[in-house]
Image (cartoon, rainbow, N blue to C red; front, top):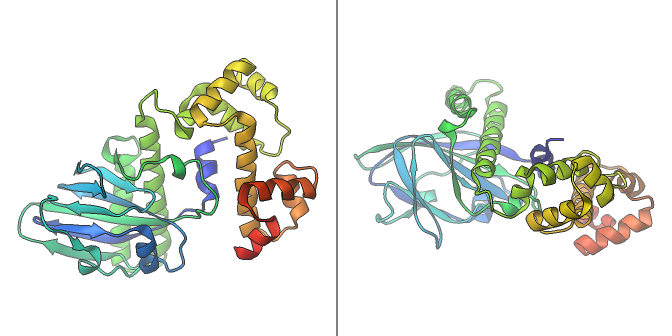
Length: 316
């Protein structure tokens, strides 16, 4: 079981490119919080992640209240929670609001030239909506802003070429270009997340570190592969080729919860998604996430989300 893909699939990523920018120094603009951007890019979208790919030149990025970071060609600025941030040729320049630079008209990919007559930066901006009602192990463990060196990754050149292709395809208004643009934006985000996971320090705690640990990662794969199975710590330890006590301690240290607590939480995340998307009855959903009775499932769901499965489905 590919755990990262499994978890990303539950939040239903939906992406697009919205800006192909030819920026000339000096330039600097503010990107507002995701709730504001979402209403422009996709009204009604619950959550918004943003990626900025620097194809040429360099720029600076700064999350509100954090230190500025220099970004070079071939690197991607990821803002997974859509936090307010600033981009610019240098951040000492007065920043203008992004709506004064461009008015996004998704699904159209806008090509703009902005700034002065100095050094050139080619910047491609993408956005992704995702469901955020149920806490997600990947998204909740990502920082507010991080940089991935896309060009140095094995898949980097292919993804960069794909971005360049779909920009031209969208500009020509070729049939099917909107679908290709969306898929490339989703691929870009998945690759920058993979890059972040692989570059984390070895002693970094959290779910993402657990995914990278051979024994904890194997345990996660087992639970995600068969979430409805009546797992025990003993069974997980046996199939992970590690002692029960070592697995329990290591899993809790990295993931932040004991294996059975994590499994119960993941089952509820799956159930919440099924309630949103599927029109099957509650008994089938309960069985699908490992509960023998609908009553037991209802109690567990209400403990997790504070409302019954029926109310959750109705509110969705």
